[in-house]
Image 1 (tube, rainbow, N blue to C red):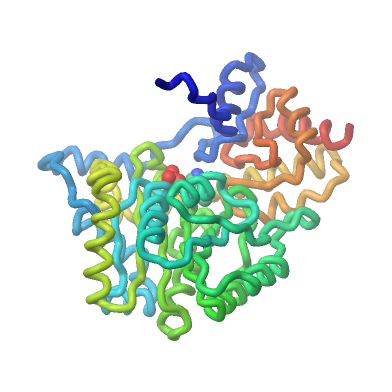
Image 2: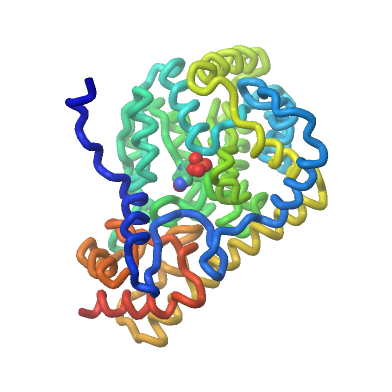
Length: 407
Ligand code: PMP
C-alpha cells in the first residue's frame, strides 16, 4: 500500500551530520547543529540539572501521568518565572489573564498554539520573518494556517532590515497573526534593538496583530534569562496600557537548561479575563488530548526543582552565563583570527553584533560548498552554530573561511 510513497528530501541539518559522521578528516568541524558544546566540543549537562536530578532521585514518589496541561506546580512556577519580575506581567497573572500549559519543548508548544489558533481564531494568515526557522513554516502550515513572509534580514548589512519589516507589517491584513522571535533569531542571529522593538510593537498594536512570541534562546542574548525577558515584558506593558488585547508565547528549556531530549517548555495564552481563561484552558485541553494526551514528566520535574530551589536556581543562572560567555568568546576569537591572523579583507563586524547560538555569515552557497570540501559543515544559507567552535578548532575554521573568501 505504500508503493506510491515518494522519498522525502533529507532534513538539511540532519543530512549535514550524516556527512560529518562519515568524514575521516580529524580536523572536521560540525557547525550545523544548534546545541551547546563545551570548549572540548562535548555536550554539557548543566551542574544545576545534575543537582536537580539528585534531588529528584531522592524525592520522586511516582511516575504517574501528569494533567493534560502539566502539573499545577509546574504551571504556577512557570507563571512566576516568566511574568513575576514584571509589574504588568504579574498583574496579568493576578487578574487570571494568563493561561499556561506545559509543552513538549518549544516545538510542541508551537504546535499546540498553531492548532488552537486554527480552531478558534478567524484569520488563518501568520506573518513570519524572512528567513525563519524552517520548522516554523512546517508547523504552522501542517496545522492548516497560511504563512506570509515579512522582511527581516538585510543581506547587504548582515543586520536587521527594520524599514522593510515595518513597511511589511503596515501593509499586512489587519488582525493577522504574527510570529516574532523573542531573542537570538534563528537562523540569522539578528535581533531588533529594544528601541526597534518599541517601533515594531507600535505597528503590532495599530494593526491589531495577534503575536506569537517564540522564545527558544532565553538567556543567550545577555547571559541572564531574566534580563532576556525584557522583550516579553514589553508585550505585558502593551497589554497593561490597553494597546494590545492578547498575545501568545512559546518557551523552551532545551537550550537554556540543556534539556534538549527531555522535551520541556511551556506555552502561554493571554486572555481578556478570568472567565475567558477558564474557557480557553478547557479548549486547550481538548486540543492537546488527541495529540499526545499528556506531557512527559521527567524534564518538567527537573524544571520544577531548578525554579523552586534557591541554591539550584542560583547555580542555573551561573550555568547559563557560562554557556553564553563561551559563545561570546568564540565569536571574538573567530573575528580576531579572521581579521588579525589571516588579515581577511571582508567586514566581519556582524560576527560580533549578532547574538545567540547562530551567526549568518554572509557566505555564498558556493563558498559553503567549498567549506564542506574542507570538512567544515554548515547549512547552504551560510548559517554557523557558534557552539560548534572551540579553541582547538577555531584556527582551522578561520583559515578555511579565509581561503574560500579570498580564492
Ligand atoms: N523556535 C526556534 C526558533 C528554534 O530554533 C527552536 C529550536 N531549534 C525551537 C523553537 C524549538 O526547539 P525545541 O522543540 O527543541 O524546544
